[in-house]
Image 1 (cartoon, helix red, strand yellow):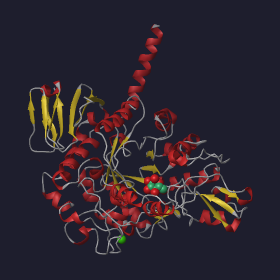
Image 2 (cartoon, rainbow, N blue to C red):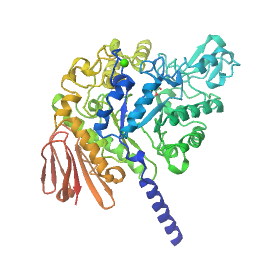
Image 3 (cartoon, rainbow, N blue to C red):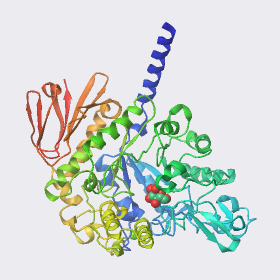
Image 4 (cartoon, rainbow, N blue to C red):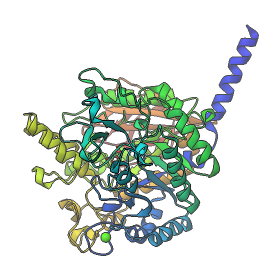
Length: 567
Ligand code: GLC
Ligand code: CA
């Protein structure tokens, strides 16, 4: 009995140490840039690497310590760079390898790390590998992709996320076979079961790591391994396709191999998109002793908001469950948006002019005060909003356009689809960065590839830099606060008053230091009663210029966000 107790104590001590081990990537504050939309320097309406270089002082001024760049490799842009035709070259729209080398050097000069997006669940159909692969059945590259010979009949149905018919098999007459594409028809899935393909990918990763990049984000990687016997899936599986596509076969083996060949040889961070189908799988991806990835990037948080709204209770439940599942081991990413989501303020808070600024600050306070590595998507520091397209012709995103065709073809409800797009389309989150109040918001001189939001005259960097109370300055303050207070990075999280309908309150605690975070998620004034109110010390953050505490009550203005030191 006593031995068992000692054992339990040891295990607890050991795992607590693992969780609190200091790592640069745990302390990182990541800024995500969608390069197409950040800054255009040559007037072609498309953001470019020179544009990023031009804005590095701005990025530095935010205080963020790392940049995650969406794909910048050569691509025919069926899915804006997520269809790579050459993994060792820069997309001509974005510039040259010389621009890249300069950008990386300039980032490092400023102590900013660079995380690259690695897109290897699939390539472009214009990649040389695929051109070879489709040319004949005995081509040496044939097995770099998934083929189904037509003489075997129609392949078992697989769902495609971006196909206008939803069909992931595409017939290719040249070899009388079908190829598999979980995403668009121009994004054939790579065959991870082929060791040669895997070696190619590790070599590509080493090519970038040798250049000095500091991390990798593995796009759609949980789908990479497949059961190549292609068993039939039950009817209607597509409604729940992640259950069938994620974490199949030898995925973990491939990650361990990648770790061995790439991650272990460089000081790079690693994160995959998606975190498996449950907490156990999430842990299997990131627990240190397994030697796979550094941090999990789970979707539950961005799946919360619906066009019809969401409940704060649900929000608290999701974030608290993930935190507690990772309280001892593993590490999480914290984010409310990215290039696959509409704007954060529209989805989680309130984009009405009277509440937009306060609610943006409140959401950024949340992201930057949780345990896990925070990711801020470009423009969210300003509270950029959804563009509000009304007609399908305005959309550029393949997911929106092919989704529309599918609804039309299957006699679905087009009106509802358009409302869903207006709320949630990825194009909402891809409009050009709003730099100033000049033409095109200072994005560039040419017509931008996606229109600038009309509100740029008011919501832009220059205006917000001047205003000490702006969303931007609040963001910078929060970043600095996180850097100054390790408790915000490593501290234990405790949810308070889960049942409070308006307020999300929690504490963070580390080595005897304790802070209280209080966030009003509503447009009402509200009040929360808590003994901690009688115990507050210094106010660390406030998105208004005042606040009221009466004995054991904290009174909150609409979307007020407060952080206090607790005595
Ligand atoms: C990931 C990316 C998304 C892309 C898809 C296909 O989900 O985040 O933008 O469209 O993979 O590569
Ligand atoms: Ca350009």
